[in-house]
Image (tube, rainbow, N blue to C red):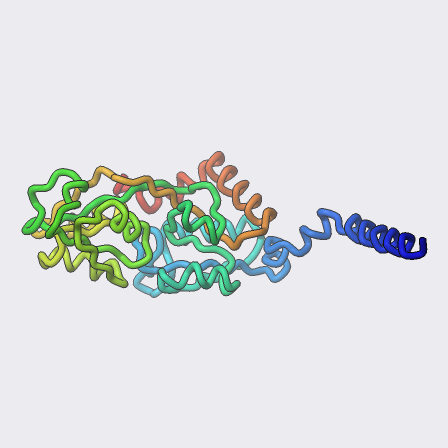
Length: 264
């Protein structure tokens, strides 16, 4: 009997402790609350991705994603700190808590969503192909690159990397750390194609009209999303509201036009 009463008392205390933790208590421990409390939002991005994030002549961060990050910090009422990092280091930095968010033209994918959380898309694009005029000037579709002897350059860790591996198994896939290196492989005739986003491919084709050709019909869907660590509903909900509100009030369109108005 005493054992039963003791067990009942333990269960009762446990239930009371559980009831004592309200949603308000939990929200105080959220990442959103931490960011507001410290007064600073730390955003990671690779400042080599024009026109989304790059540096001006004074070395200051500029671009579409930079303006999105600034608007988030403004609406959140905190300061913004941008950390310039190599692309492959962004997700590990997010997971380890070195940065609060990734806003760096990162595509939300099902595979990446296993380890990090994405918001809805704030911008959408698709992969296109920059072709070598010498090696692949006669091609009219990206699928024609899936053939023995074809060489495709991709930037390591991008969605182009995974797409090329999955959809172009007959081609040789060469991986490079930097976007510029991939472009030079095509310009110099060492690769048939470079897969990247539509805006970048159009830019590189304009800059290299004699040695390249652009296939500007996207062959994938690329939703650029804000990335955060898993497990914080409050921060995710706030970011979702941020995207919704700033799309509705026209601010996101203003940012898009400021950086892409002459392109699209």
